[in-house]
Image 1 (cartoon, rainbow, N blue to C red):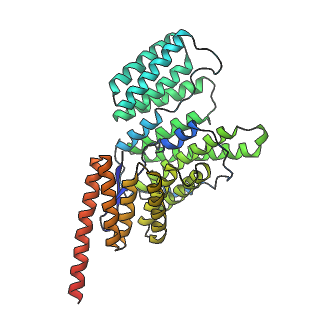
Image 2: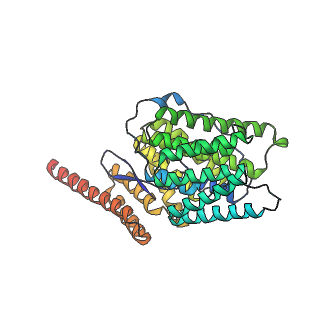
Image 3: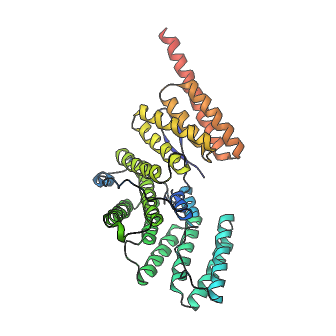
Length: 385
């Protein structure tokens, strides 16, 4: 799902691409799901310095929307992230097999959009886990139930369930900087952001980012005792997810300088781990181009948007219509109406091929605004002559 983003001075719509993630308020499911799917070499670049957080607590210029679709789509992607319920190498008992089956049914139902069935399956799994006193399973099921609450937009229930999951995990001996706890903390940041608890959201993002930076520094200082390449990559991707999510929240609040630095760091991680030709890398290029445009840095905005759209075409990116629309909006802002119109037409064709009615509507609105601005510009030119 795509959501409308900021509008520039001329009112042309800027669309949000790639909001399928844990971003918790807000993307990055692709970050962590990609990390869990495939091993790879550990990134070679150490994380840059933390952002200057003092600016993050300034008064917002844009109020965040409560419980938006982006937060719910983020939870949908996160639903597939696993904490590792049962000990590897041990054959599950009959009860554990039943719990696993019910959880799988719950996940499948959630993916299909059958949230009531998903909740029913998870409640059955929770009942069995509690009967057998299987704390790891209880923790994981609480987390999945919290994700379902996210999907329904029931943020209060989601918050309670995430906190219950974290208490269970800490009670089982997990360290406070455990990656699973950091990931759930990111979801809480999303809830705080969506419910306008700004101080808690910023402090939460700050803790997640700085905790991961410290963990990565610590691991790189003692590589002989450290994590495997795959585990190190997963931690780097979780940092990328945190930066991406926080950047989008800063963008919503109009903290453009902070958003720029956070996006640049997230993009650097995506390039290090995934390479340039990856869907997440392209999404981050698009997002950073949007921030540059809002800061009136048209040269950097054009360069990044053009590169993002070129790569998106090559890979048949699922967010190609939104990426093209954003490049069109950047051209419109700088008065290049011919190029903007061509890009909007291409975006409309792609959105129509996908059957994305909401995106089609947004693109058509942007094209109408472009035509009106173009006519106004021509009329002003005639008057001057």
